Image (cartoon, rainbow, N blue to C red):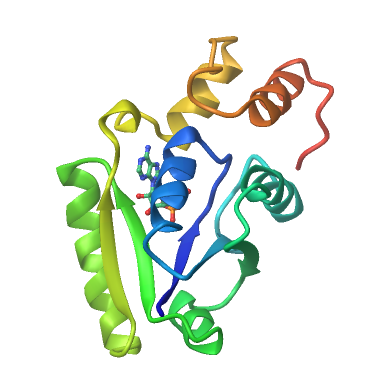
Length: 164
Ligand code: ADP
C-alpha cells in the first residue's frame, strides 16, 4: 500500500491539479496534497487561503488529505511515510524542469521515488500564473478553475480582496 505526496504552490488550485489528484487517488492508498510555503516566493493567495481552497475541493475524496509544508518535501514525505513524490507534467518544458528536480530530490531522499503523471489533454494549457493574469484583466476563467477559486479571483480584481 503506497502513499503519495503531491506538492505544489496551488496559487490557486486549477482543474489541472484536481485532475491529477482525482486520478492519483485511484492508484495510491492515500494522497497527501502538500501546499508549499516558500518564504522567498510571492503568492497571490496566502498559505491559509490555498489550504482552505484545497480542503474544500478535495473534501469529497476520503483518501486525500491536505497539509502544508515549509521544509524540504523529501523530509515531509519521509516523516509521513510516503514513498512517492507525485508531479504532474504538461509539456516537454515542464518535464525538463521536473526531471532535474527529481534528480535533486533523489540525492537528498534516495528512498523516495518521483512519479510523473501526464496531464489530461483537456488541461494541458492550464497554468496558475496565466490564469491569474487572465483573471486580472477580467477574462473568463470559469472553465479553468473551480467556482470557489473563480469567485476569489473576481474579488481580487474588484479590489475588495485583502491578500498581501
Ligand atoms: P509548483 O510551484 O511546485 O510548480 P504548481 O502549483 O504550479 O506548483 O503545480 C503543482 C503540480 O501540479 C506540479 O507537479 C505541476 O506540474 C502540476 N500541474 C500544474 N498544472 C497542471 C495541469 N494543468 N495538468 C497537470 N499537472 C499540472
